[in-house]
Length: 252
Length: 281
Image (cartoon, rainbow over all chains, first blue to last red; front, side, top):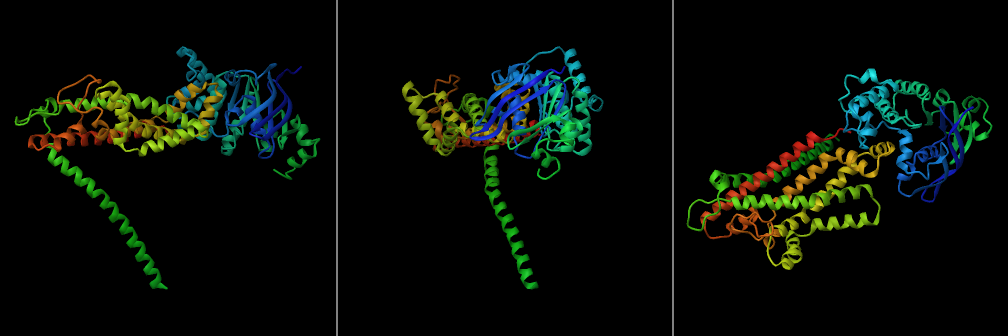
């Protein structure tokens, strides 16, 4: 029996008067990788940012409805608790340029003022970097600045930074769109490892990627959740004609 | 056809020459001032000059200790007032670009930058000297702090606006509260720009005379109490250079040279800080 970790009920998001996400109802099961795809401007990123309350950081942005995390409405919770439980990785790698690689991994503790003993920090750093397959590459240069790494390594560092906080859910906002093909495949392989421990929600505009990495796929169009099903079903036998048109490349 | 092209090449050549000529012309007066002041002033500067008070007219020797220390004290107090206000205002402006307060704030800062320094001195006189009933170094510091504000605010704002938004988002996504995002991520990443703004503002007010004329007022004796009138280098230069005595002219030249070296060092220091603490994004 699969347990639901995130349940969106009638979720709406707005930029001013512009209704960007319309009445989304969606259930996300624990330890699955969910791909969210759709054409540009369909609201997929806004929906993703709504889940950890990043949406409302933009001036004039508002949201209503419910998003339940383990039965608790994130829209009622304090955003800081939400973001500690739901980690996020962005489109462009954004390590803190003023911190070393080591400090970047534990940035969530360090910059939040949580004091940890050195031994514990070492464990967290090694464990997190190992989980994102970066430990062997950087274990000798942990004191170097995070911006010293290549783009793909930086992105994995950012994933490690999110993983270090031991969240329940990880959100990815087009995590590979700024990366080269080799780094992209490294990150995609990571998804298979990561979903053992975390629930992954991956926004992508790359259909092949959605097909490769996800268990379930959601298709957004014009702010609506058009279809949400098993990835295999979505790509072989979509029910909605709009999904069909998108998958066959009639619009993008 | 070929004459046309030759004509064009010639024009381009002449234009380049003009640019170089005018640039050199810009540097000439500056170099002239530098050389002249150093020539006239450097011979006056020695240990005695730096550690003694001015002598009465007719006596040889004498130094500018009171003005030197007075300048240091007045500028330190002015910085202590202006830096927190300036940096916090700059942070507000960069974080809240489109609010009404930000709009008015920016307008005020721009206007303040253009207010003549003597007017700022007058305002400090009206606000602090008149109600208290005596000239004081503190009122001079306040006048100078008001002059520093626009420079610090603008440089802080512009530095922080250059930081990518993704940096803020990265910090927020880790569950950081607003004050920590600002103090632990945004400010450290922009520290070189903020500091260089602070240093430049200090360099800017170092030579200001007008705001001090009727606030710090000047004092021929050593004074450490900031509620009392205090001497400063620009005031000393102003008073002594307009006096009819040669000994005082020498003091004024020496003081000018010190001021010049001070500003020069501040500028060099600013460049070093910017280079060393620049965060590679």
